[in-house]
Length: 215
Image (cartoon, rainbow, N blue to C red; front, side, top):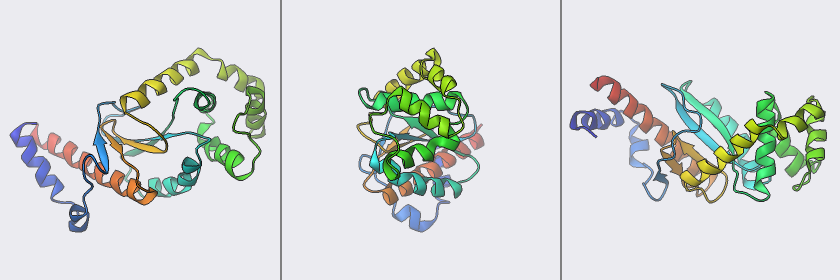
């Protein structure tokens, strides 16, 4: 990093609240620097990728808290769900999310899938394509369209992309937050996870401001 940019970054970080600076997360402990790149980054915005698995009970427990956290973020923060394609039993659920996303219904059915698996028991953890299509039909999605989306080559490509993303980010489990494709948050509890994400978001904002000032 150039000396001028470094100085501006430190100055920008100095604007953070004193309590936040005093309780700053520790690299290697609270977060790890990575080089995965963002999942769907947009210029001028900060991406927080939520890497999840529908059958993961911790992901189900985090989801409502994560939505409340997102509502408190600035308009420059994008919370992007990324289903983890670790292989095996993870992949059918990742495929289901990508199929729903391709049909434009992922946002409104996301919580419903968690509820069906973990709260209502209306979806088995080893749900078949037929059972998934029936579930999404109950969410207003034509079952034939959903089955076709499951087999769509574009959905298959997204599945492969997810597998590459989790490898590049060094993920070993879910839920995991990845900030701007540069930082993997090390979870020691949901509160710590979100606190660390807040700090990294502020750090990315400060870095962007410093970079803009140095131009």
